[in-house]
Length: 151
Image (tube, rainbow, N blue to C red; front, side, top):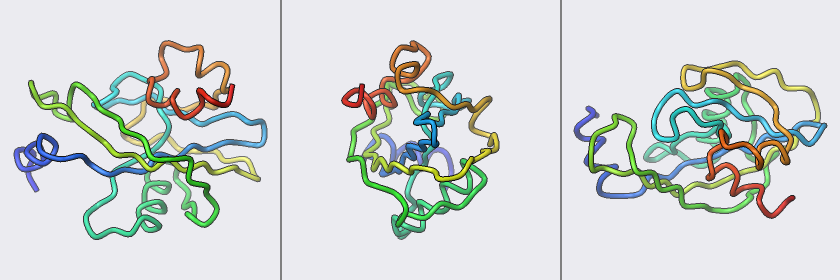
């Protein structure tokens, strides 16, 4: 699918995606600083779109491998809820086309230390306390929404 076709989809319908709320033994949350639109320049939880005909469990594994460098299983995650993420822009920055994601947010509590890799969509990654991410202007409000009732 070319960019023009994908922009027509973005302009016409919501996209369905998965966000990964990765929590370590110290109760810190993994965030990456986004390089691409939407939410460019903000710290955000890892995540990605579910592809057509892709089952949620398969998407979960693919996204975790792409974003973290390790395959996580949906059976080890807890659904935190469904969220609307609506952005004024789109991945190409084309004027007058916003992006709407319906996000299935899953929490994964890690037993072991995960040393995630930086992928092409992030310029940096780091672990944040919930207090620090809620206090930072650099963490996107859509990420903060996952934690606003926990602190």
